[in-house]
Image (cartoon, rainbow, N blue to C red; front, side):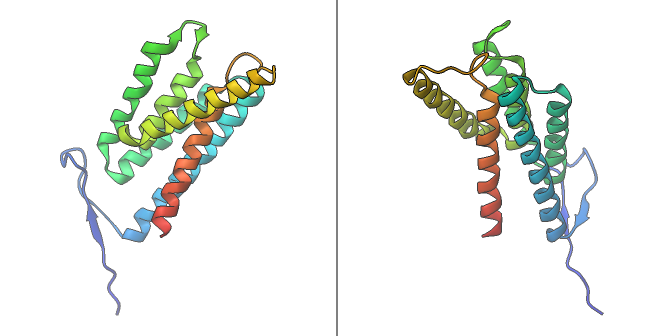
Length: 172
């Protein structure tokens, strides 16, 4: 009779929940599924922002719930600090109808919750640099986006690219 090796995954705080016993393969499968779910939601948000210039609140809430599930499964409670760059973005750029939009900030918060504080910074930087480059190219050719720059689109693509790079590292 074959016995399966099990590993105990404990939360960083210890008092939040009792240790869970899952196999390494089960944990990796759940992480993979949550990453795919988050990436699919980011793709939907990106396409919605590009086409309609709106991102549904339900979609952003679903992404935040997926990110919260990621935190619970991985036990990386410090990922919740990933909301801080979105708060800074809100303080610096939101001007009540002018400047960055509310959906951009909410999506940045959900992205920060999923990726964590240190991993969300390259995602946000990549999204902003690509958005700036595309906007400069469009001004050079005298074309414009309808209703401003669709930052959710670039944030979605940047997050999906980062998730793909993480999945490739797991696979290797």
